[in-house]
Length: 607
Image (cartoon, rainbow, N blue to C red; front, side, top):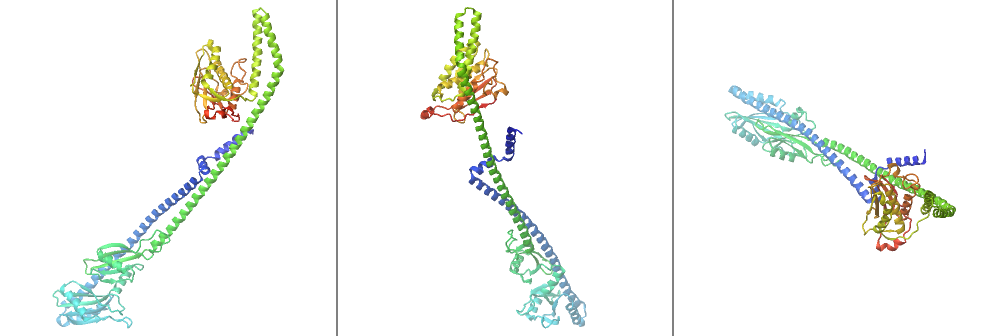
């Protein structure tokens, strides 16, 4: 593999690796912007992940609450149906006793009533005591059996008379009232129920332990993990599960006695470290309004399971957020590393390119030095003989009268002059240019050179025009500027034929602030393949014997010593060669006069 091919492969690899130019600029030149941008990006990603996680958890919470709500609503509906059935059973039991009294003979009524009361007491209805009254007097009483640890409650006679009075006010309809429970009683809720005959002459009263009754109903409804409340429409709490939410439940049930739902306590939190909602419950209630016992039945399910599930989901979201942030930080770190790596590689490439450029310049200087030594030697060795030959040829031309011989001698004289011209060009190209730089009127210099060239090419029908503003001033050596214009105008005219045009104009400034002097011609142009080599020594597109190939090389060297450059391009009409000069500044006139030749020019040859 050659040196150039290895360089090309190295550049190709670097082009593949270095693909983050904007990142390079930000990291290298604006580190604070990069840090703030990275922090903003990470914060935005974290906020987006947190927002998405919150939305997912919110949807999950709503779904879980809906499931719990459906569960407690179904349980509440079931309990309402059981309570309705329980009320119907109590009414039927009491109605059986009333019907038996009406159908039995007068002499057997009391025995039949008592037997029915005993049968009811022995049933599973949880009747604690039963009374049968006529005209306000107790005819018979049946009490259930209880242990000494759980004795029968004592019901004041006035309460029995009160419930009988209520029943007689609405014959055929069950009346109910809360029985007084002593403080030291083992019973939490006792209920008196009464049913009177249609004529109001007799009534049956029963005492029911509501806790035991509804515990049995709760077991039948399969609600082991749910709390059950039963509230009478008048606000009496019939069943209380000893919950911290009893007051809130009573208030909610009395506020809406038909049906509804509510969350007792705080709504399950989306924050994974909160225990505030562990005691919360979902409450749903249904009413048995219109039945024999207008009670409101409520069922509550704990929400700690929902809270635990949300906490588990929140921990997963938090873990995912941390993982995503770690991935983002890793990616940002990798990008920074790649950007820094790119900066290092680019600096190495720039150093390598600079070294290669200096090497090429050194090689070029070595070539020019060798060429100068050869030219100096040739000029010294050949100058004197050529001068003698030229003098002898001039003498022969003056002495010979034959036109044919005089023409031959003239050809010899021209060729000797051509050799001398080549020697002078070699010397001009090889030796350093040290002429003084000063303010130069480009329009005036261009007109002088154009007048000189026009005399030579007027007979060929070529139009030469100078279109340069009189205000254009450059910092240059006047003689060398005219030499540049002379070489370029001669080359342009040599490429033209009759009817073509050559125009000298000004342009610019360019990005470096230089002013341009452009020479456009409508001639034959330059081949695209040869365009890149026109500034090389001894390269020419002219016919053999018509050009030395040193004119544009000398132009390039003069421009290099002036800190400018020259470029040649093909146009639609022909060729344009532009030289770029440092503009003259009156305030910097001393610097212009003492300018050095250390600026390395840029030589372009593009189409």
